[in-house]
Length: 385
Image 1 (cartoon, rainbow, N blue to C red):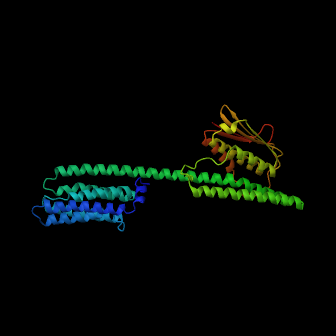
Image 2 (cartoon, one colour):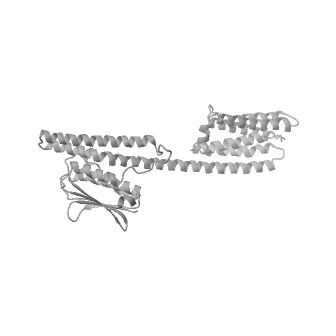
Image 3 (cartoon, rainbow, N blue to C red):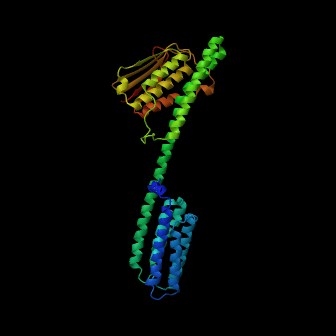
C-alpha cells in the first residue's frame, strides 16, 4: 500500500486538485515558452507549442483515460514533431522544455504502474523522447545533457520504487499464505477434537447394545461436544471479523488458551474417554509465557484427539508439564488400545502430528512421537522459555 493511501482517504478531493495543479503548471510552462521566448513565431514554433500542450495534457492522470493510452499518445506526438523538425533542418529558440518535463512525469507513471513488457518498450520511448526534445534547439548541448541526467535519475528511482512495490506484494502474499495455514491449524485444533468425540460416541452406540439410560448419556455427550464445536467455530469467525486489532486499539495478539484451558480440556476428555491424570509443575502458570502456554495447549489438544482416534480402548492417559533445562517439557502418554472404528474421512490424513511439530518448531522447540518403552504411545514436546 502506498504511504499516501491513508492521507488520500482523509482528503478525497485532493487528487482532483493535484491533477489540476499539475496540468496548470505544465501548461503555464509551455505557454511561457511559446509566447514569451519565441521572438519570431513560425510554423515550427507552433508545432512545438501544440506538441507541448498535448503532451502536458496527457501527463495529467485523468481517471477516464487509461495511463497507457495517454503515454502512447504522448510518445507518438513528441517523436512525430521531433523527427519532422530534425529532418526539416530548422533550429529553434523554443524547443519544448515543458514537454520534456511532462514526458518525465509520464515516464515515472509508466515505470511504476504499467506491465513489465509494456514498460520495457514504452519507458525507453518516453525517456529518449525527453532527451531528444532539446535537440530541436539551436544550441542543444547543455539542455540535452540536463535532461539526459534527469531521465536516468527518474528511471532509476522509478525502477527502485517498482522493485520495492513488488517485494511488498511478495511479502503480503507470504503473510496471507501463513494466515491461511494458521487458519487451517485453528480449524483442525478447535473443531476436529470435538467432532472426533462425536463420531466416536456415535460409532460406539451403533456397534454396541445400550440401554435407554445409557443412550441418553451418549446423546448428552454428543450434544455437549457439538455445542463446543459450534462455540469454537463462532469464536474463530469472531476473531477473523474483528481482525488483528482489539476493541481498545491495541494489537489483538494475545493467545486465547493456556494452562487453565488444559485442565478444562483434560476434564472434558475424561468425561467421554479414559481417565486423564494431569500433572502441572507447581508455580508453572505464573512464570510461563503466554505464547508457550498456548502452544502447549494446542499440542495437548491434538494429542488427546489422536488418542480418541487411534487408542479408543486405552484405560489411562497421563499428561505432564514441567520445566527442564531445555525449557518446558510437555508429555502426553497413553497405555495403548485398539483404534476407534472410524471412516477414512473421520480418521484424518496425518496432519495432526505435522501440525504439533510445526507449532513446537515455530517457538524454536522440538516434538517427538512414537511407541513408549512401557507400551502405548508417547508424545514429548520441548518448548524453550
